[in-house]
Length: 72
Image 1 (cartoon, one colour):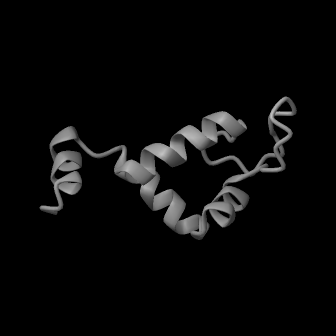
Image 2: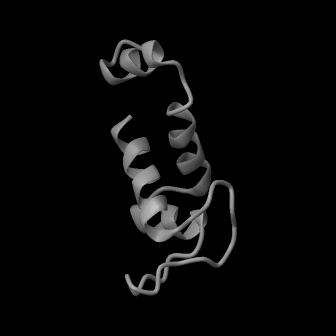
Image 3: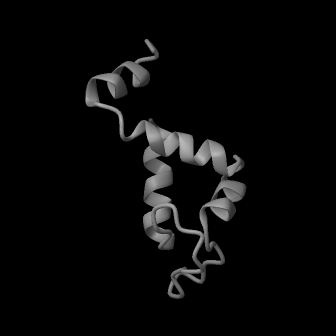
């Protein structure tokens, strides 16, 4: 769950839109990240894993708690 929240925040910081393969980045940050694939490569996972982490945030809070506690 922590990784999913971090990914979401990094996407916000770098201006990566949901599901977008666009070329949008923040120039003030001098970032070269442009899409989910490049973000995933930078943090050492593949794009599929990145998407799966983000899907965890769509679960109901009860399931999220079980995952955080290692019970599920």
